[in-house]
Image 1 (cartoon, rainbow, N blue to C red):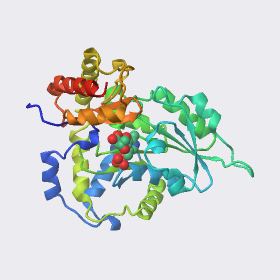
Image 2: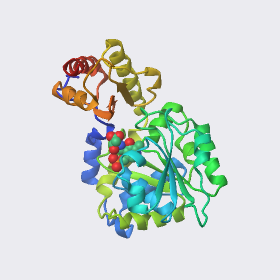
Image 3: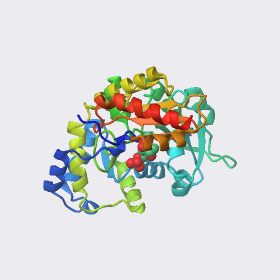
Image 4: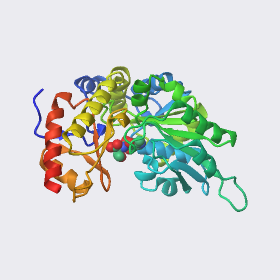
Length: 350
Ligand code: TLP
């Protein structure tokens, strides 16, 4: 495939709907989803429940809304929510825990890509006249900002067990749970069986233009539906988007393994070239987070700018951390071009 002028590795959210999705958008049956009468949304919700082992599923416009709806549905004002330090819920949802649910946050470390049960255990608080009481434990798998790491199932189970022993529900931000499942060989229902609610994105590696699914017990989804409405997320003929979600789940899941192979190959090639640092063994799925070399005077923002000028789009994830994400619109034959554009950008900012 011809090497494009701009190679976009900013995120797997940059994927464009496939031709089959375009076709489905034009031809799908639609209705008014606020009245529960969009057959395509209903089909996607049923398909999702079946594929995840959940009682029910709810389409949401974004992953952020699905996470926030879940937090609001599980908690009441004044409670505390435990989430890991670099989780999306903490880093990228604009303080939604406080803004939307009027709860406060307790963070736990997640250096390896997941919180250790001992650290989680330390954070639980009992509700009393003096203490807020833990209302929810949030986990993330795969862990975006920790380089797409997969939380081992036994760690997920142990963390959840600790919460459940205290009657505290667990929400899993599984934006990329299908990546975790394809790579680990652990079926999604197995991950979901350890938690009370889970959200995943259709709009990332699965290539839909928009949409995330929230799953849980029937009564949870009924309440979540009300909260989605509070957020202004009740939409009408949204089967147009749900039709793409059906294709995401039936056609785009298995190919995620290609993205994982590409990310590993890319990380090895960039490391071999000597321009950025990474441990390729930690690249388990489609996210590679590189560190700028010590002798480089610019920071990750400077790198992203210089790389953009050289025709490579990336994101910065910290002062010296640069993220590249592989996806279905990236061809692995472009890896040598990524390596060369990376080299140019490092030279510019050194
Ligand atoms: N992640 C985006 C950015 O917001 C960082 C990306 O490019 O990776 N949970 C996780 C783990 C996510 O990575 C994201 C999006 C979300 C939730 C939110 O999904 P959207 O973007 O649909 O609101």
